[in-house]
Length: 196
Image (cartoon, rainbow, N blue to C red; front, top):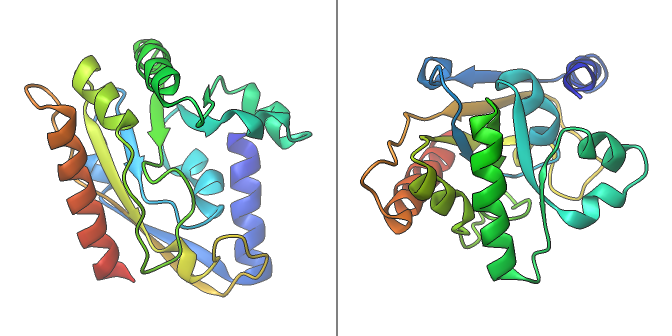
């Protein structure tokens, strides 16, 4: 998947003149962390494989059924949830998230649960914040403006430079999941306004 991400990124640059710029790489801790990121485009699922350390994602269970892509995704041991069963999903996020982090993987979660158009915002789910509060692992907030160049549910890609901003680590120790979620949401949404 990482090699595919590198190839896809190279292909996007050559064919669409679409590249990216990352700010804040120095904010990535040396140990595994929980990445909570804005999700505006399919682009994040490609390039995060290149930018971030070894990772697993929180995904909708039905994605694993997509031929080839889903099969490859399943090989990465994602945390696959059924969004219709909230209680069971939260339990799975916490149990499997702790396990993946202990194995040295980073856990990538899009707290809004789906791709969001630039300028829009959905309710931030609490799964990632609950995992952080119960595991003690730090949270790394990430803001992107990818939807400006590759809008959600669109095949059209516009040339330009996508901005990725990696925020300062949010220490989860001694914080409730509500505090973690609020700090994450505030930082991401403020930064997205700056880079749009």
